Image (tube, rainbow, N blue to C red):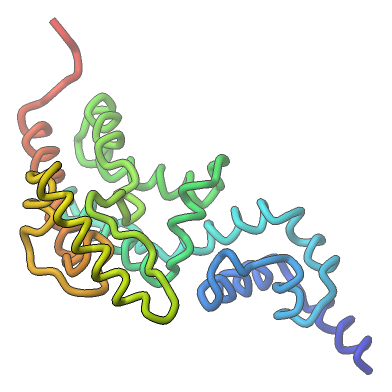
Length: 238
């Protein structure tokens, strides 16, 4: 009977089902716990059944990226490029917050998947279709960088939480010593890092409002792009 169930499960298997299950599993357990064997168990099939749909772990990860990218809202059909870009980026950020593992996978993939290329093509089209030159758009894409995916490297990122009994007390003493050393050696860095109220849970820095910091920097960037576009900026020299 068990064999019949497994055969039935394999018969119903498809690439879409494999990828959707992998995304759900990564959401639940984290990308580090995802393996072909664990995924096969989740789907109720033998591991070899998966290889009919994905050749290896790398192809699985590529497919998972495309599943996630498809969740990003398409660009709105309106002439004002700035709001279209802003909403697209914030949609991408919302998607990556739902799939916490996706940033790491996006950063480590060496191949541009069809989903990634389609998103990039669409994103570039927002500028080109609204009167931006190819020259300015090229430099805009460099400036936007990973922000188009909804994330950016944070200046005041905290190290991963330490676990274990008494860790909080040890950390408090250690942090106090580090702050004292920082105040002596790098006073300006410390002053800026501590410029806002801090409590637990931030990614940008303990207590920093991640969303606020992301949107603040995004709006600064968009303001600069808007100014250059209005001035007819070109990278030509001389």
